[in-house]
Image (tube, rainbow, N blue to C red):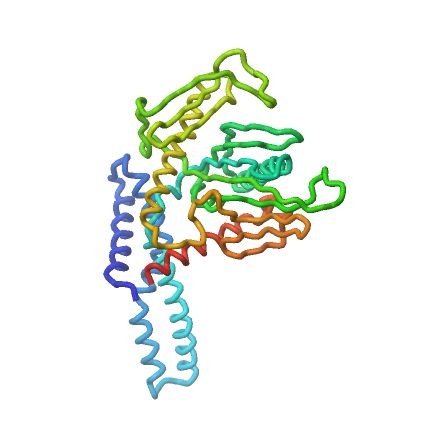
Length: 357
C-alpha cells in the first residue's frame, strides 16, 4: 500500500488551496499557479479519499459478512460491495501512483513540429506533405492553432521540409511521441507496374522554449546573412534577407529564409534555435538519468523507425507498442489519432510505474 501520510498530504493540500482560492485574498501573480495546482488535485482527490477509507470500509463489510445474525441478502449485498471495493482500490492506487509520478515540465508547453522528407526521393516528399496535412487536420479537430514557421516545397506538391508551431493546451504531451522515422509503403502514382515502394519522412517534436527556459548569449551566436533562394537554386530576393544562426557551444544551426525581412527571419530562426537547444539540454539530462534503462517509447531518438503506414493493406502500425490499426484512411484524416496516442501514453505510464513498483 501507498504511505497513508502521503495520501493525507494530498488531501490537506487540496483543502488549503480551496480555502486560499475562496478567500479572495490571493497574490495576483500566484493565482494562475495555485489555480492550476488545485485543478490538478481535483482530478485525484476522490481517489485519494476513497483510498484512505478502504481499510475502514473493508472492516465494516467483513463484520457484516461474519455476523451470524445478519440476513442472507444483506450478507450477499455486503460481499458484492466488498468485491467492488477491492476492484476500486486497485484503480484508486494506480491513479494516485500516476499522479505522484515525476511530471515532465514541458508537457504543458506548445510544440514545434519539424517534418522532413527522408529516403525515397519524390515519394518521400509527397509522404512528408501527407503527414503535414494529417497533423493540420488533427489541429483543426482539436481546435489547436498551427502556424507555419518555414516551408520548403518540392515538385508535384511534395514537401522537402516544414516547420510549424502548434499552440493550445498541453500540446507537447499530446505530440511528443510522434518524434522518429515514419515509413510509408504504397504504390506511387508514377509506378506503371503496380509495385509497392517504401519511403520515409522524419518527424521531430520539440517543446516551445520560453525566455525563462533558455537564455541566449549574443557571444555564443554566429549570425550569417545571405540571399534567399528558391527551388533549383534561383534567387528569389535581391537583398540578403536569409539568415543562418549557429549556436557555437552546441553546434546547432538554424537557417531561415521564408520572410522577405531579415529581421523577421532572424526572429523565426531564434525561436526554432531556442527550442532545439532546450530539447538538446532535456535529452542530455534524460540520457544521464536513464542510461541503464531501456524504454520502448519516448526515447526521442529521431533515427528510430516508430511507425509504418501500409496503404495496400490499409493499416498503420506503431512498432514501439506493437499496435496495428486497420483504419489507415481515418488515421490520415486525423479521426483516430487519439486512439494511438492514448495507447502510447498508457505504455509510457506503465513503464514508469514498473520502476516504482
